[in-house]
Length: 241
Length: 241
Image 1 (spheres, rainbow over the protein chains, first blue to last red):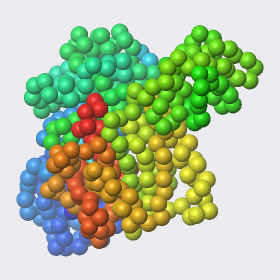
Image 2: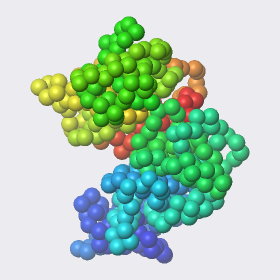
Image 3: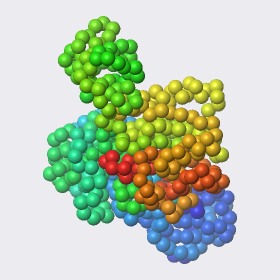
Image 4: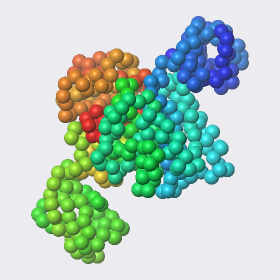
């Protein structure tokens, strides 16, 4: 079923206007057809088209319900700023794979980090990428994209999850499986480094903040591959598929 | 340790020449330093640099051994031809993630499939992408990239694995976990469709060929995301990390 995102919803009648209306017109939705209107926070309204005018589409709400495509676990992807368009790639893919939020932060070996001036525009762009990927993959929630201005802040925020996991190429003993099987969890933070990896001191800092340091196997993954591999495995481990 | 790929190797002495030599010179490898020479088939030689001349580097083989970074399971990625550079993306990432081989084939809804003329050049290019990703991720084996000219041939080849799995967005009951937990396995084929998905008739054809049809969860994954998500989960399930 086609889905639309509309933040503000109330009552038994809704109207598709603006971009949503344009989209609905392209799809040639007609009176009597059903569609989903999601609030982007995990709630959705099952609707039927009542009337189509030149500028809007009137809908009747048949049922309000929790989204049926959101993961039962909340997984946050924490990624040290990578170069160029890799962050955009990770935002798109992590959204498809069901991430709850994507958090970017600086670390010692980051060669790229947006300055304050350009950050606002970039965040808008990143949030749009998440919204578009959420729509395409049929999610009921648009993951928030956040930027923190220090590594320590990222650690502190991430460590609040039931499982705070850092993936490090020099860790060979502790696997993701061991980390996940030690105790139950419903929220997790997955933290990965930039192109050059995290520094040993940063990994120690993370341990002190409560992180479990683990491996993603004996092959070295690129910085944009590691978070998506970890997220896929985590969703599998959580029984999502 | 730096690794080089050299197909033909024998005896106790090896020479880095051509591109390998250029690469070694850029890295400023000096006599006494150690490196790995992989045959790209899963065997490697631990070597020490003996002498550096203007055009080659002489090595002494200290030990021949099986690669320590290859997965214990053989997972083949079968992907219906996607558009443009998506296949290249999947080849690179699947190599990092430990795929044994990547097989592309046509299916009903493929909008892109290389003609015979351009295929040879493209295959060369794809194989180079696999070689480069294998080197970067520290693999001992370069996955072969293959192209088959029909869907039926892809099914027949893929079905020879212990687990032949097809991921279909309209399958909601059978999860990847169920498919993997039903009996032991050491080889697997993961088959996914093109942008528009597989046709129902194709999915039935696959079932008849011995495939297990399963879901990757309730979110719709893009055609380039699905094989990498499945491969990550499979490697996790196989105890790789």
